[in-house]
Image (cartoon, rainbow, N blue to C red; front, top):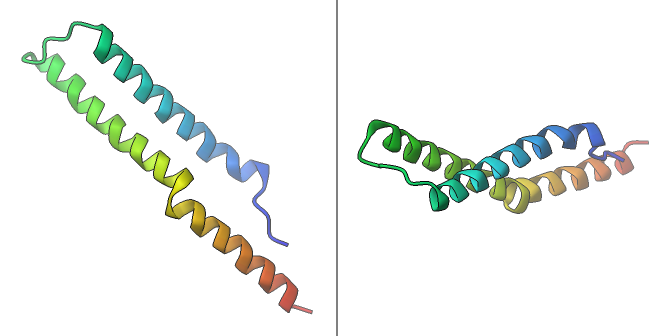
Length: 86
């Protein structure tokens, strides 16, 4: 039976933790820091926030959305294929 190994889950988990941690850090810094958004550095910070927000959305969709369902479907199909082969 085809199963996802621990090694295959490490990379997505680490990337997800980095993106989530970065997003939370940026949101907290937006709430606590005084940033002048009319300067170039403030605008660059907002662009970085947008990039992290998009990445965070993709992480959530990966773990809860169609990618998780697709992985489940792939496992089920592999299990059926293993049963069908003599």
